Length: 84
Image 1: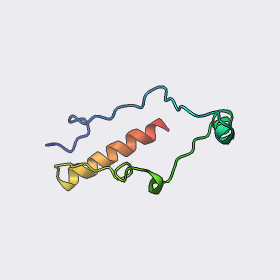
Image 2 (image 1 turned 60 degrees about the vertical axis):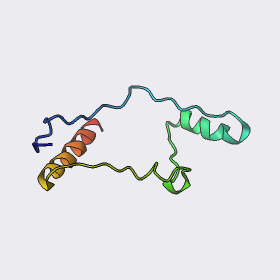
Image 3 (image 1 turned 180 degrees about the vertical axis):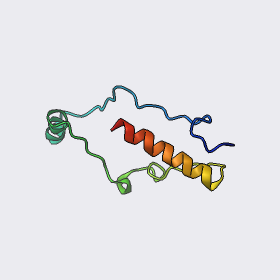
Image 4 (image 1 turned 90 degrees about the vertical axis):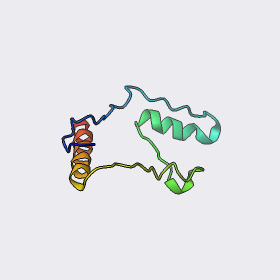
């Protein structure tokens, strides 16, 4: 990356318009599924319970100067904040 300008080739893909979550309707999961639909709630497991230790520790390399890194982080935060 040669420029700290966010428009210098960075991509910030929007989320898909629809996400699907397949849930069981068995007796134990029925209330959680109902709560998700009726109350528009989501539940997220703690990272410690994942069966893959790399699921919650993403790693990436950004070959840039500190100024470029800071500009990138601000760009991502601004884009995410604009959505909500």
